[in-house]
Image (cartoon, rainbow, N blue to C red):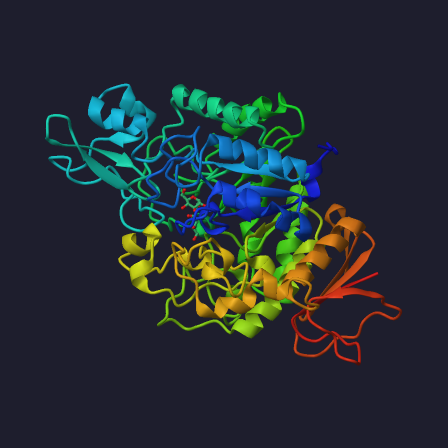
Length: 545
Ligand code: TEU
């Protein structure tokens, strides 16, 4: 395949959530052959690469982010030969393949963890994880006060081999996801072997899960601030003891040296909920990772000043380290942006929505989502799309609670609905069983009836559909190389943002009053139809030559 230098700097990368993309065998769960069978959709859409969420052997306590074997495929998703076929089929189509690496924790079914529990206190096996004695007279209290991101304590007590209540192990996420101890060199060696395993099979890079979490402050001091990564105070000295410790950067420098041994510019992408932008930029210094997800951008409110601030700060922070910014609006952890943007501006991002909760305005959300996506795709840098957003797919906001699978729902005692609503299998064909997700009328999470209208076959070739809008925007982005910039601001005020990116003039109107186009503007594309007077209405982005 062609090897242009720095391909990743402006790449559009499409996230596939394997269990919900395409089901080839009718068990209601997506799989690798299903993905291979649908690759032509991604070629037609016009993306450069795919990122696959985990498909490794796993008890699926956290939808595969609890990995029991880093170098195999869960039978639910296929086998290693299927992975090889998928990589080859993608490369045949000039699509690059990025896989997910989960180094902060393993599954509690990983052989290392089973051995650690069995080997007992003081064993070498326990030093691969973070085992500690409890506090209190009989060690019945957790070693510190840390909370899990998913709710409840971040510690679980084990029973020792002799049957006595024993030590506690740290898990920043679910109890089924014990944190690894990155002070142990065996852990480094194991992950380097895993990197090589997948690099040798031809993958083009790794999305590194919880990249900001690997190293903990060595004293495991109590922490009284918020546990949610991006909400923590950003100033050095007062950083949460479990996130964004300086030691993580040594790990990524070593990985960078390792992947640079391989031809073809393979990349590392940090999933790091870190702020401010300058701290995040440290992950993408020249000798570290290539990209880091810009979650501050994802979290920014839909107003001209908020968008201006986050865009300009992100560009400045990445420019300072000669990296590119990586824009993202949706993924498998957050409310889909077609629904998020249909909530009142300024409301905090809900962690899932249930039938009894206030419902987003679907039409407004979609209108804004289309405008937001066109704004994003004009920005210099790389952009990530999440499967289904090209269909304008909303969050499933009325899932019955009894089908929810996200551990957040259970661990928070039902106070957080969790992330299942953005993980529902996507619709391909309006009139087929499971909307064409698979051959059977089964899907591991139920699809709402309203999804027929979002199915690909209802939008394909239909002028004005969200799918055709994405396709046109991606084609224009490629043609004009807006991902390479540079960006120069033309207007930024209370209601309007306008900038030039490469040779495209981009304008988004966030305000109530329609806005005039510049004289002689040649409209290339607009996120919603423009009225006859040619003025730009509210919540519309226009690209002009
Ligand atoms: O997410 C890390 C993470 O911090 C998220 O849990 C985030 O805080 C939350 O979802 C926001 O609502 C990664 C994966 O993307 C996620 O799916 C996993 O559950 C998590 O790591 C544990 O592996």
